Every structure is written in structure tokens, then in C-alpha cells.
Length: 138
Image 1 (cartoon, rainbow, N blue to C red):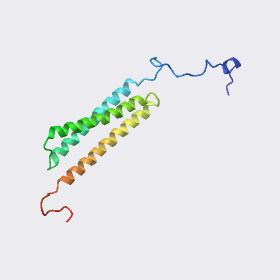
Image 2: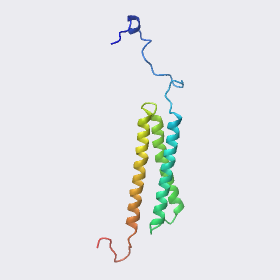
Image 3: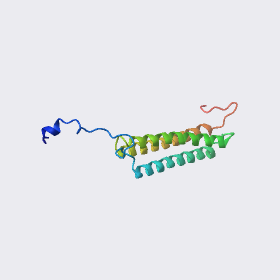
Image 4: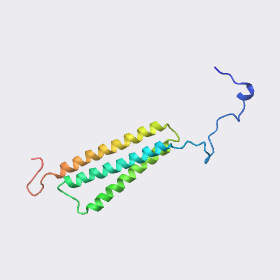
């Protein structure tokens, strides 16, 4: 146990205070964290675009306006991944960067897996012939 001298123990000026906004003492994301975030988000957007291309070419029921369909999916991916990246970069001010990396990696993997599952469902459900007198289940 380390004992402090009396003059130091009772002093209010020695207590730790948060840094003032705009000072260099604020914790900023490292350049490695920023590069990792940008790379992860770009990878997620590219995987989302690739899975949408797979849906477009694998599904017999294609969109009547494929460019608008692709643009809509791209904008949705950018919005979701941008929000995740902003949260990951902002959270480095309050928690360790490794936790932010883990969160972002888990989020990107989960979204890409959900995209893949979604694409399989869309391709499977639209692959059956539909018309008068045909039924999928019997």
C-alpha cells in the first residue's frame, strides 16, 4: 500500500479531470484503426454488391429496373456500414480499440452472412415455376 503525504492526499487540484475539448489529450483513433475501418467497410460494400449480382443473375424473376434495384441496395449498404464505422471509430474514445475492432469485424461478418442467407432464400423462392394450376407444396 502506498501512502501519500497529507498535503497531496487532501488536495483537490491533484484529482484527475477529463481533458478539455479540443486539446491533444483526447483519445483519437489510431491511423491503423481508421485504415481497418475503411477497409472493412469497403469489403462489406463490395460483398453486398457481389451478392446482389448473384441474386440478379441467379434468379429467374429479375427486377424490371435493375439499376434502381442495385442502387437501392448499394445505398442501404453504405448507410448501414457507415453507421457501424462511425460507432466503431467513436467508441475508441471510450473503450479499447481491440473491442472496437472486434465489434466491427463481427458486425461486417454478420451482415455478410445475412446477405448470403437472404440471397439463397430469394433465389430459392423465385426459382419455382408459378402459374395457374401449379403449386409449390403439392
